[in-house]
Length: 230
Picture 1 (cartoon, rainbow, N blue to C red):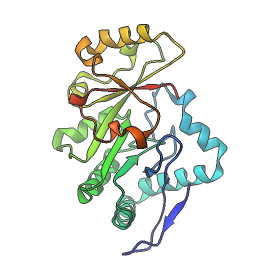
Picture 2: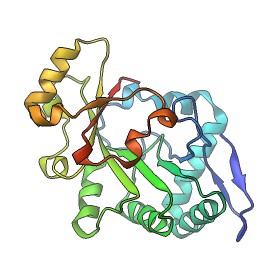
Picture 3: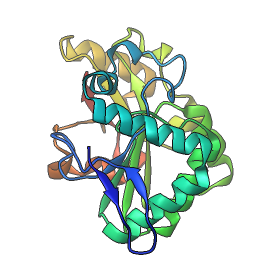
């Protein structure tokens, strides 16, 4: 996970990822897993980001540095993120391969960054539904910002971990399923929860963001996305 330095308007030192085997060349900004996520998140014991955090010291340092930055100095985070985006102008940017929106103020900072870079598509997956709900009460979701609610099916009854109805009505959902289980049973559970019409628009992730790109500009009208447990 390289550190990008020396922008054209200011010096900065913000750890970003230039991509991975799934995302291809799409850059991303991440935080420390678990501690920035919901305390009741059911995926913490199987978190893929937590595994990388434990195995790779450079990744761990990067995630921890970013977390300290957004917790202590959001203005500096915002300035550094703007400087990097002004220099590199990526077509697509993912917010959080690891971690989540740890505060409402942090989401607002990202919102301001996104508004300044209309030519970049930003997307994120989040379980911080209360923070997102608060944001959407007073903010219009920009056309270059896709928020995808993350829901967890492998814990059994999806009704115990399903986004609230008011957000389901506005945002797409990433449903994570255990591919070792029978798909018809999982789809039946989903259909009972979100309705047959919506389940008919669920599309499965093909495993490569560069080739697909569906999630970059996903809206509720486009349908939801289905991920295998990872």
